[in-house]
Amino acid sequence: MRAAYLSIGINIRVHRLPGARSIVEVNNGKMDAELFRIKGLTKKYKHLIQLSNPIFITQTSAFTHLKNHQVKNWQDLQSHSISYTLGFKLAERNTQNSKVIHANDLNHAFRLLTNKKVEFVIDSQLNGLQIIKKQQLKGIHLVSPPLESTAIFHYLNSKHIKLVPALEKALFKLEASGESALIRNRIIKNDPNLKP
Image (cartoon, rainbow, N blue to C red; front, side):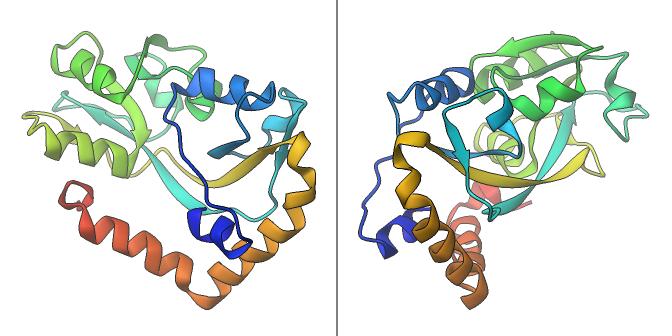
């Protein structure tokens, strides 16, 4: 997204906020854009505009300390205790029948998991692997296959509606030229914690 904005003459500054707070701040106009979210949030958040081009595909995965489990999909999680970061909309939609302990951030969620307060943590595969390697967590492993592959989109507050055509064009060019893939690969290559 930084490359897309720079191509239209805008240098962005990224603020890291808890997921639940972030989307509200963008919707009420205190922040300008939501860096990346799942599709379809404009029904609930009326002042958001979703760009039409997905910016990447994420693998939403489960992580566990359990050695023997039969979790292969969202439904299999219903009888388990789980944690994910507050504001993670995809997890919220798919875990309504599960026992959930919301976490303030992903570090908090993995602390709950290592302390066996929950049986599973849900997040993107790359984020989870990064936490496991960075903190050298023992006995925590990735559940395979992923629970879901999901297209992720950028959202703007509606006061910036005039930027939408230029940003969509910029994203299309980045994807078509292969530059988006190069950026993603460079990020993974430069962060040893992101390598599976």
